[in-house]
Image 1: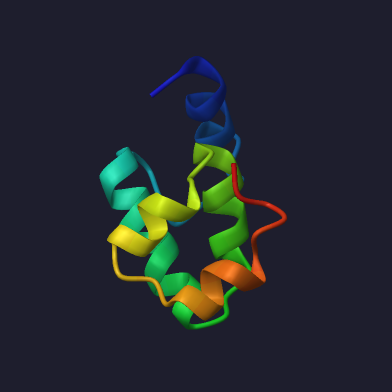
Image 2: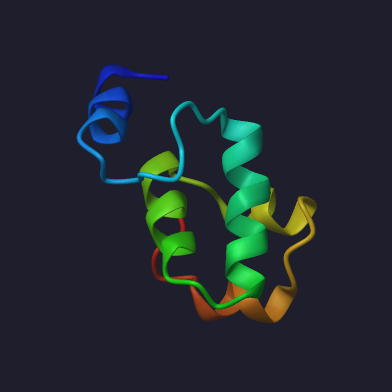
Length: 72
């Protein structure tokens, strides 16, 4: 994890996570995305997740297509 991400976590931006790997972030983003939780957008933009990664992890095509503007 890079310095900026560690700083973001230490500042309390994402209080629910203390140490998050990219694989964990993908699965967490998929589960939050299916619940229509806005924290999914924060995780997606923080890690720069792509549509392909989310789809491979099990996200529905419709949910990924609905957020295509923020996907990297």
